Image (cartoon, rainbow, N blue to C red; front, side, top):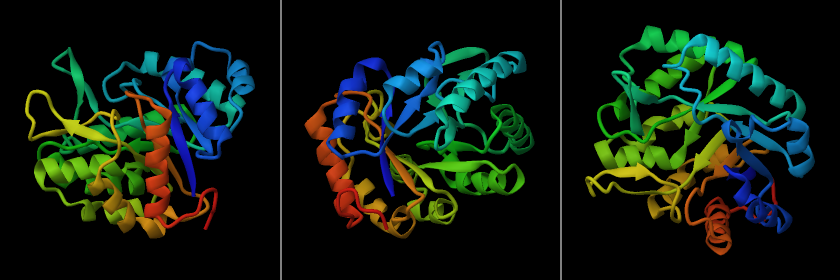
Length: 268
């Protein structure tokens, strides 16, 4: 198993490098949207470890195909130079009735035919297997999502970028059991883990924030996935977008390793 850290902006590079040099992480997950304007050779010279690509705002379910084709061309070029471990994207809604949303929204999985066609086309544009991230559900989508991701895997060949803490959010928010994800989680080799916090508008709703340390519930679910996570080809990316503090991040990564009964830098 390899543990990574999400590298979202250049200001985070010193902490990311220290985590790498001190042996706490093995790779960076680059939020590639923020770096497409750079020559990938510059990134290759700057980043001293393997990388993966995480796409934030392709909006491939909503964006026009001309714009998406241009973005995919840039991603393919960067991938050719940087050779990412995987490329992932969000399966989510960014707008409603033409208006941009302040926060991502879960898709309506009942629009199965359209969603599968768009995911298939976008994967073709990317030029390699695309891993799509599950959403921290608030409503009934939490019960529908595992089956839909299974359909995508079988019919399109996409993979699941399984966000462990998002699945915990779904269980808290709408009662969709984390156990319903285990079958699909066993089919993937790429994972996310981060934190969630109560929504400002409704404290009973947990939202994906990446701003604090991971929860006890997330650590518990990690244990349930131990057999899949403790594998040489598996990656798990630790996300921290706010309060990016070295000691706090190291504490969380250490807790992850301990929960999985892994010694530092060991691979099973």
